[in-house]
Length: 421
Image 1 (tube, rainbow, N blue to C red):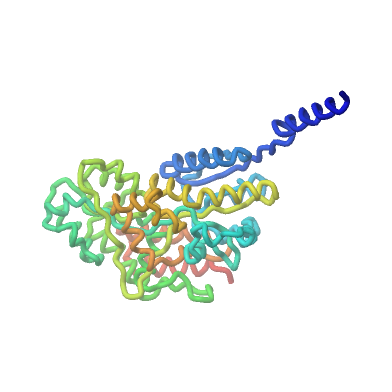
Image 2 (cartoon, rainbow, N blue to C red):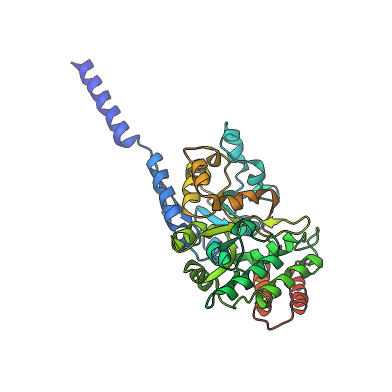
């Protein structure tokens, strides 16, 4: 009887251990991200799928910020008050500030500990977009390039075949002029010049073979020939292209309603625009014009780990792998216009291969991958202020308040004064 009693006690203890005491405690991690209008549904689905697979982890979201500058500033404030999110999705060009201040956790050791990392779809070239000063500060989540959206119906009416969309800015401006002239009451074009992080300014400078600073990062370099060509393009779009001095939201509404012929902005808006346009007209996309040795800055954001707690780091790493991996990437692509930093989905018929075959507009950004370069982050404590300075000077050109060369000279002097000495 004693032996049977002990067995019963042991069995009961085992059951209790299995059901309650030995169950893994739930580890909760806080996550923040930007652009709720683009990413809210995407992040919520990824988190739901993750928690279904890993019930021992719980994901909670902070209120999303409206842009990458706001996200960076908020996280810097939270670092002072010990309120940082455990995982943060930050703009590609904002990683540097978190590395310089010791906030970002280097994920290289986590990668090294993965026995089959090479099979998980993280291409080294794309992985390098999350590397700063030798540290793996981020893992790419959503990547983008600037592209051109156009209303094929308006252009056909103007005598321009969609298959022969121009490949130079002069040609694009001329097409916009013809479209407006052939459809009274319509608008010509809009270039998203005010997009976060001076991304479009960098795109036009890089497209002309230029750089932001000299290799040693001591002097401004965008005031050279490439920058002069870029600022002249901005001015010509505003003048000859008859671009109105309106915000992107207005331009997007006009485009989606069929009243704007050409819109140049991030591929990130493709899914959203496709849904808004519906059957009103034929939406097509085209590559950005490039000069000799031209490049384009990779846009988008990376998943960064901020938590220093070992238990939360383990959970955070699993979540980052899931969100940036094949399943998370598939959810992200279908819900946005970004492309993934993971190579597996695009080649898998069960994930994105069929999707890309059926949605050729999404391939425009993919075709620009060979000319991608980094989204530049200015050094020093005034990096965020430099972004505002450049934006203010571009505004004077778009509003036709200053000659382009004068605006570029003022921009160069102002940025130079803010660089580390």
